[in-house]
Amino acid sequence: MEIMEEFLNGAKLLRPRIFKDARGCFFESYNQKTFSELGINARFVQDNESYSARGVLRGLHFQKGEHCQAKLLRVLEGLIEDVIVDLRLGSPSFGHFKKITLNGEDGLTLFVPRGFAHGFLVLSAGAKVFYKCDNFYNPASEGGIRFDDPSLNIDWSLSGIEPYVSDKDSALNSFEDYKKNPIFSYGK
Image 1: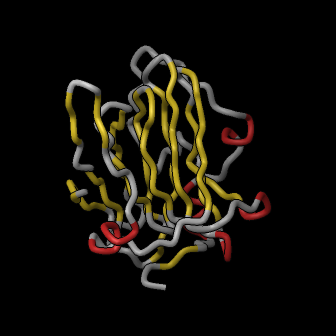
Image 2 (image 1 turned 30 degrees about the horizontal axis):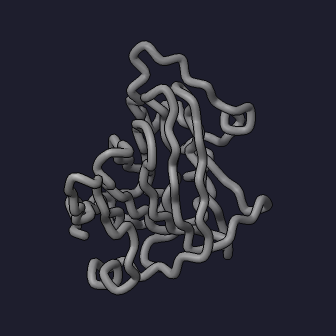
Image 3 (image 1 turned 90 degrees about the vertical axis):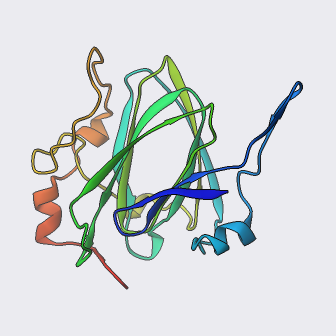
C-alpha cells in the first residue's frame, strides 16, 4: 500500500499493491501495521456497504460529537465521484473540498479523517461502496451539508445525469449555517 496523494490536511488516497496472474488478482485492502506506517492510526470498529443506482447522490454526511467518524472507503463495483469537505474550523483547508473518481477496478482507497463531510455520486449503472468507520453509527449524531450548497460550489459531474437525492439529504443545512456554529476544530 502506498500513499498516492495527500490533500485537505489529512485525507489520503492510497494505492494497494495488486498481484495479478491468469487466475485473477489479489491485494491486501487493509493491514493495521501498514496503515499505521502510513500515518493512519484509526481503530476501525464498523464496516458498511451500500449499493446505489446511476445518478444517486448521497451526502454530504458526517457524524458529530462523540460519534464523529473517520472513514476508509473504496468502490467494490462501478464508478463514483467522491467528494469530501473539510469542516474543521482552524484547518488551513477549512471549507475546501476534494473530488476523487473511484472505481471497482484499481482498488484505490480513500482515507477521510474525522471532521470531514463526505458524499458521492454514482456515475455507472450502479456502484457498490464499502467503508470502514472508526466509530459506531448513531442516528442522533447525524449531520450534513447540502450537496448543492452555493458557497461550496462543488461541480458534480452531472452532465446527462439527473441526480437522485433523498428528501433527508435535500433538507440538509448550508455551509453558511454550519460556519455560524462549527462543531469540528482542527488539531483537537
